[in-house]
Length: 254
Length: 254
DNA sequence: CCAAAAGTGTTTTAGTTACACCCATGG
DNA sequence: CCATGGGTGTAACTAAAACACTTTTGG
Image (cartoon, rainbow over all chains, first blue to last red; front, side, top):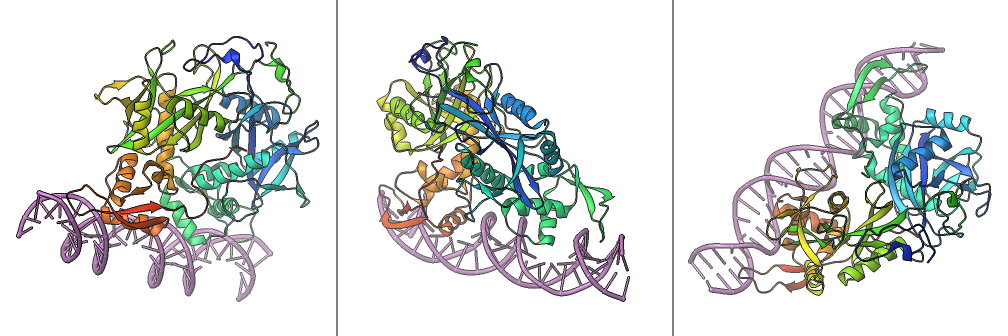
């Protein structure tokens, strides 16, 4: 019942001034596939609560920016990135998810190629890379654990393990009927690389010829005529992804 | 830069007191299938903006309730319903989606059997029923139109046409790999009724024997031994849905 | 020539559809 | 006994998987 700035209610018969407003944040799960493993960029909290725990980059939504704009700003400020695939995931609004105050967070996930992932790591001393461990073989959409390069599992702040779990679930669900997989590869890539991305995300080995044909039959892949270099065996052809019609994903919010 | 009640920031280095907070609402798309058509319950706005236009039931999220709780409260207050399938859909946060103030809305959709739909209509003079028209044959997830019983198309308030469009898209996407279809039928139903629900949602006629076997092979359907009554032809067997393991859907937010 | 991975052809399988048909009920 | 929709069997089709195989490169 605080005296906030007066604004007019949206819906039938309610006065927003009568209610205290929650804070609204955006949290961002920045994912990539590196060396056959699904990874996430996290930063270490430098204050209570969850001091020292790892957390997703996030920040408050400003009054003059949309949710998508807030997510892009956070991506830019925290990871020096722009022009990456990003999509709204889910909104987490449990009353006690932040022990200090009522904070509703709109979670986003972003997908980037491993190279840009490494650039972000070098550019920021705050960011660290973690492998995502999905313990129970399949699909509950629940929380996941993270694992550092040294093989230690580490705690996550707030409900961020749950957010990450939902990001993995969404990514798995979209992988075979949308072109999200290509967002995790450079502009030119071999079919083997594409298969490694799929195998890392779904955590399942696949048959090479079957995967190959399934991808080529689906359309959207264009052979460049170029070949990979620096390998000691027969170099594979490089492909490019051409969206069939209109761009991939990027959900709207008006 | 208003002086709101002081609360402590969630994420690294930001002070929420420095920013004006948006209002947060929940809007609810209450869907059913009636006479072979996908329908929605709407209420007519009795004030500006969009005075006289149709809108989804909604309301502000209170500081002491979760988003799911807010959605259930709105369902109870506006439609006198409880215990229905409900799931978070998407959060709409365009800066100008409400011309009066910054309002972020977390959209939910709910699925109910046609009988309970009609009860809600009778219990409330404010509510009206509309058929949902998805004009462009397939899947952009964009806005839809609504059509009254008299066949008139009517305007929707705010971005509610877009919210409804996303609800239809989600429902279509979930129909064949989750048990959402059963939420739109009474406890006992014939396979024909189940097929009609699927046909209404996907807007596509299907082959009877193929549909029948697909459903029975998927498991979860139990023949009751009872038959429908009041028909002039051979009465069909009534089936019941038994969730394979754990309840259907109902996404968590902590 | 050898190792290693690229890339292709053929068979098998599983899931779905299409179509023809019989069955049960009310009038 | 006829009309109507319920319910079943069989064949055809399609997408995917498994497997065996040939090809191309670096060393």
